[in-house]
Length: 94
Image (tube, rainbow, N blue to C red; front, top):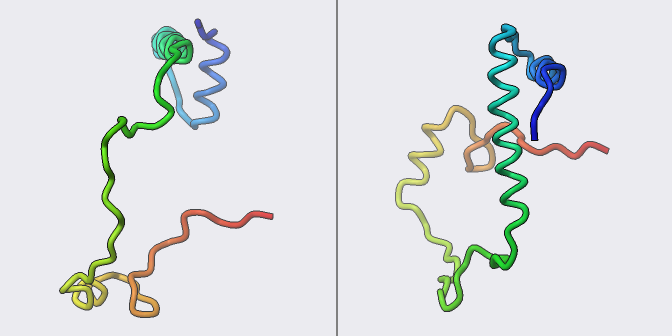
């Protein structure tokens, strides 16, 4: 699947990239190859739905107390309720 230079320029604008005309041509060819490979992968049938092969037993999740948890929490830049506080990744946008 070939990409036009106009499509590559549009993608570059969305990604806030400044590309030279030579780079636009280069990326059009490279992205076209990637898209062709993805299309080829989509035609593969008969693959297992799961990455877990048959017969492999998975262990049950276990909660284990880490011996130096307090030291780790105190060393973190931000703490809250005796836990490391990290920036929110997913937000509820309604």
